[in-house]
Length: 137
Image 1 (cartoon, rainbow, N blue to C red):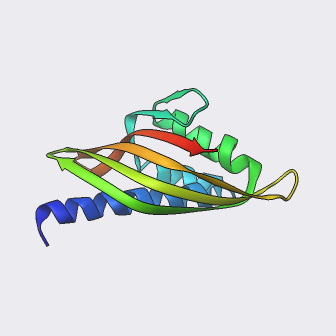
Image 2: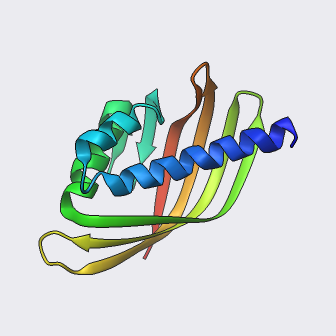
């Protein structure tokens, strides 16, 4: 496997870990917080359509409270990745489908959209530096 293919696989696996950890946050937020610390760059910037999130702590709090806190369970599914690598920086675009069960009503909802991410290679491996999520209505 070429170095580019290995790096693309490492980035895809990082994004998969992000999704699995976001799903875990509904049932085990403390465990999710520990795992998120290995996923995000300290200077993370995010836009999920509800205002900017600045810093790894901000995104972790958002995912563990605003998103997972309102859901009994979540299931993220990623599709159609496009990963472009330029040395220690990379971008990734993904189609995402999320099924979730609301705590308050018990309703099962579907969220569809696209992620556009920026990744940075650090001495500890690839980290997510930026996420932009655009929801399909």
